[in-house]
Image 1 (cartoon, rainbow, N blue to C red):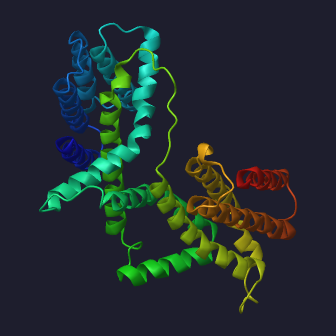
Image 2 (cartoon, helix red, strand yellow):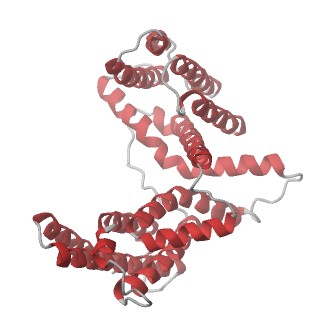
Image 3 (spheres, rainbow, N blue to C red):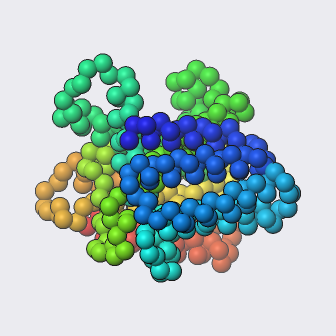
Length: 371
């Protein structure tokens, strides 16, 4: 899997070179060619190709990808991409089954797209193992570094969640945004979020890492024995590792601790010299973003809570989930109070009343979640 991991990153870098900030053209043809050879080569090496006749579908795929540097039509720019993805998926499914019905093709096509999400943890683990193997000099017992590896996995999984949460919180609260910018500038000693070069670099790195992880997870998905079975049987119950889940919860709770402190000290208690502070304008920011954050928190709580471990004893995971639920209530109250201040300044509307209703509904949902 090490070669597949390295190749996946090389393909992700190639994708960035060909497509980031570039118009579609010869790049589509080149990328389809490289990606096709890579995936089909992996399948052939693992003995997953049962029928070679469907590989003839590579001809229309190549022809469609070649149209991007021959023609310039906005409609076919989108239509051809969709057609290429569908044909590629159908080709892989037909090649992996000797006989395939229309129902099977549709089911497996959905599995090809959504199935890799179940293998994100394995994909991240493969990346970490590959990096460790490249730099370590001697083989060490895996048991010693097992927990450290899981913590690193948790941190890597948290990064995209943390980016989304920080963007939402920063857009919701100007004071939190200013504090976050100052912290980042003091830590890195450079204006990270002011230069376009740095912004482009960050986005490129995020896209490259995201594509590489998805591609590795895609390989795990299609190489799994169950994928080639016509009857999938029982549905899998996806569970997150305890250490990984605790790492995610700990990092998010630290961020929410700072954010909730700002909400309590500035918005609720109005501590400090805030006489000329425009609360109505401040309140207008972010109640929709905070609603989105609260929904993300609910999903994380449900994922990291294992039903089979329900008991009266408190453990670290439950404590972290309770803290996250508590911070979520504060965030919802902040959103509610912002709407109240804004409504006091500008009056009632149907939309603002519906926001009240949505917020109260979310608060009610927190109660059974905590229980």
